[in-house]
Amino acid sequence: MKEETKEKVARLQEIVDGAKRIVFFGGAGVSTESGIPDFRSVDGLYNQTYDYPPETILSHTFFMRKTDEFYRFYYDKILLEGALPNAAHKKLAEMEAAGKLTSVITQNIDGLHQKAGSKKVLELHGSVLRNYCRECGAFYDGDAMLSFKEECKKSGELTPHCPKCGGVIKPDVVLYEEGLDQGILEESVRELQQADVLIIGGTSLVVYPAAGLIDYFHGNHLVLINKSTTSRDSMADLVIADSIGEVLSQINV
Image 1 (tube, helix red, strand yellow):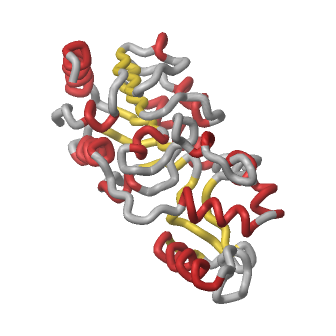
Image 2 (cartoon, rainbow, N blue to C red):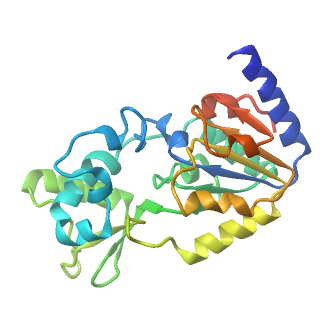
């Protein structure tokens, strides 16, 4: 770790020590260190070649019209097996358990924050661990979807159908053209308004409306931890251009 970064981490430690209500707002960069691809890096999903661009495949219209093609991409790139929480996930859970962190607001859909032990996780874009039949509403967890994925490999039938009624199963993730959950949005706003410290990590802050939520924060310290620059760097009290996991693992609570 560079000397400049060490000094900034020491400053982050001071901020954490003096904080009463910390909120963490995170994006894809938090999970890439667990081997989950993001969308916009050089080797991310937006830079890979498919019959259709990822932003088209991950849209409501495409899901409805070309469900098999949606699931071909979804099984290959979204519904991944074996990913484990990394140092960032674990430290955030530790901060919550210590009474420092009140909530995690995440744009990720992988459930790794909960797997690490975080209790208050507000998932802006849903979760691959929740899936529902569009006809009868039956619930299927992540393990069930992995089973459907394996069945699809054997049968060639890509779209999972509800064993109870035969309806198409849809992941509880927010696709393009779909609105965010109003309840989650409102709760996120309340958390941000009540926080005295906001730590933003692993996000380029270009995905709206999620990125616009941080405008509701009016606390004492805004901290940005991201490998690349963001449009909000000039607003932050502290900017650390480094690995989110490496930085947070240095913090004591």
